[in-house]
Image 1 (cartoon, rainbow, N blue to C red):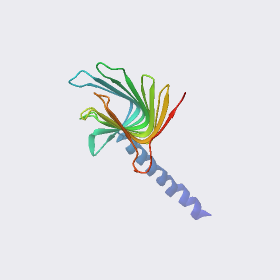
Image 2 (image 1 turned 180 degrees about the horizontal axis):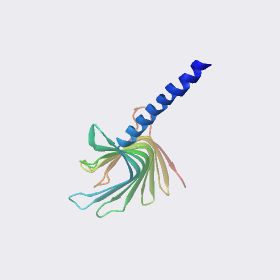
Image 3 (image 1 turned 180 degrees about the vertical axis):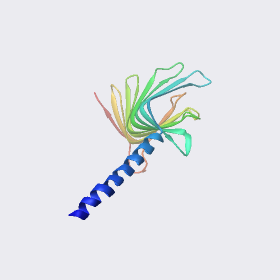
Image 4 (image 1 turned 135 degrees about the vertical axis):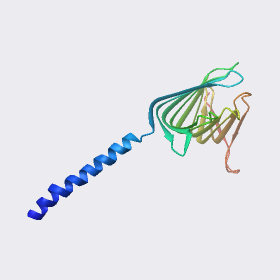
Length: 173
């Protein structure tokens, strides 16, 4: 009984204080930013805004920020606004490329596109959405593996990964 009391009095206390020191050190070295917001404008005057509830800077590459609860607004010249929502994101502050992942939703006019992964690049003028892609508007619903769009021209490619599978299109009328 005396041994247990001695152990718990001296060693347990020291064990807890070590844990507290580690916690304090972790908080001090934290790279988490709350309420992240980035805006940029390209040479053509298109605007890109990205917001997130939280961002975490990658220590190995400070240009990379991992985001949670992400919202993006794209204002293209001579076009309507595009909004993007996702649970997670990976933003490159050097070239503005963003990868959106998990529960991705893209809204453009009366069009809605959902999927699990979106690679958005201002430099390449492209949006590539994949994994359980569903495109819907007032008239149709389309299901595919991949949808690739040129941001400037709006040219779109829709396809499946496997040749024997077909893109599924259903009319709502």
